[in-house]
Image 1 (tube, rainbow, N blue to C red):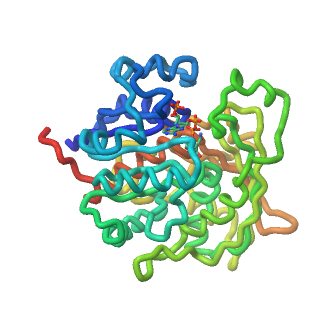
Image 2 (cartoon, protein in one colour; image 1 turned 135 degrees about the vertical axis):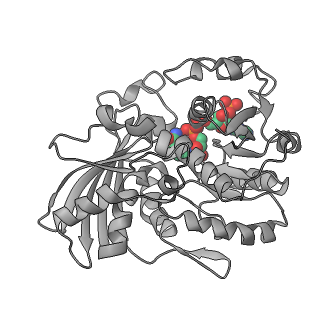
Length: 365
Ligand SMILES: NC(=O)c1ccc[n+]([C@@H]2O[C@H](COP(=O)([O-])OP(=O)(O)OC[C@H]3O[C@@H](n4cnc5c(N)ncnc54)[C@H](OP(=O)(O)O)[C@@H]3O)[C@@H](O)[C@H]2O)c1
């Protein structure tokens, strides 16, 4: 059995709370440290998070009385107490970059949900089912940082966690040329609930800052190749995206239009989705869904409320595949934005990096 002590940086936030609910029952990872801003530091977790607790389940007893540490002031202390940290903080990009690098240089691996380091060329952005081999870049990053254990690995943006997995195995065989995608994104993606954001009820907001660029550019890093110590992003497929905020608590839906180099049949596409397995399934990682891509034949599925929690919110649901008049095909897909799209995806990536030996424990268990 593997055992690791972990810290959560940004533990009082929406993603941090998800990390807590997932990790409080995780077979390998044991929560040792919770950290947030100086506003929360020194308080018991249950008092620091207070009314911001947005999960359906209660705050786990095992963490309620932990004293929150200061994520910036206590870096060295936190690094000494844990094997690695998960990081999801709401700070300026350059501050996040600096903070993550401080942890890495303190020999503490960082599994990041933040966007600050997503385009750093030697920082892998891993979806364990798709590009697990990108972890090999960590050796180069450690050389740059001058570390033995420490490194940063990032999760991609939550918006693309449904359509990129659906397109990935199709691209390998049929060459995906052009993709037009419209996303319908939940309010938890903005760290909000209906209580904290009543204006979203009966409303749709046609703008999410920075999201369309991320939805178009980040997939190309996932499809990238390691060359000369860098991940060089792929040049294709060609993406265009519109991202809308909709009155949904959790779950990002995407409407996708796709054009191929070599057009497959509908049956060929469904077969590829049905049979697809990645590293996470082959290595039987604890948080991996048994079936990653799930196609629903019913015309009115997937629905956010019905499918977002499929396989603990780690599976992708797909439906409505049909011919299009301008592109080859169109379909919809759905994934849980704070589970697969954030904390759950971060935990799965950490499991991969432990399994591959990039994260080891320094404690005698
Ligand atoms: N929500 C999602 O679905 C989602 C998905 C993917 C990625 N992300 C990314 O994850 C990160 C966190 O998002 P969120 O939705 O969880 O945000 P959030 O709910 O606003 O939480 C922000 C967290 O950051 C902490 N924080 C703020 N200023 C800090 C500082 N100066 N030093 C240390 N900690 C500080 C807060 O601590 P206090 O409580 O003490 O202020 C809190 O724990 C963001 O980078 C976001 O882009 C979010």
